[in-house]
Image (cartoon, rainbow, N blue to C red; front, side, top):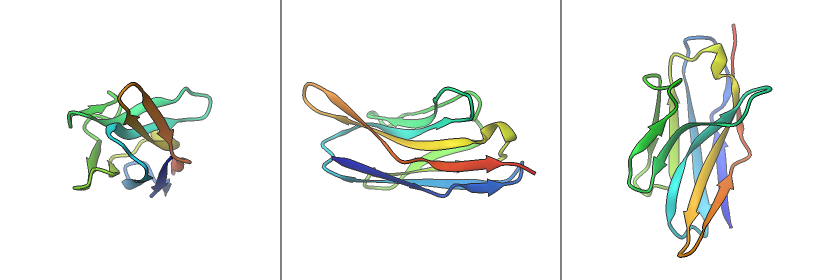
Length: 119
């Protein structure tokens, strides 16, 4: 089992910044992908930013230029630096990890951390 623990959410004014953290622990075999998704009220869950197994990054068009994903040297902790926050960024942000096995992949989700952008 793999555990994901998010932190860093909160209430921030439009134009402000937050930094989210996600620490992975447990029996990780090989990380295929790790990153962030979000789900706002009445909306579908969407990809925000991820690292792929090749080390490249993927960003949602809506956050490009404002958000930056990074990770530590062990590659088991990821961060999401969120700048120039907008009201539409308000959502529950979930950490996601896909663990690669020889014949399958297993997906894990964190509990989520709430980000509210409001004046």
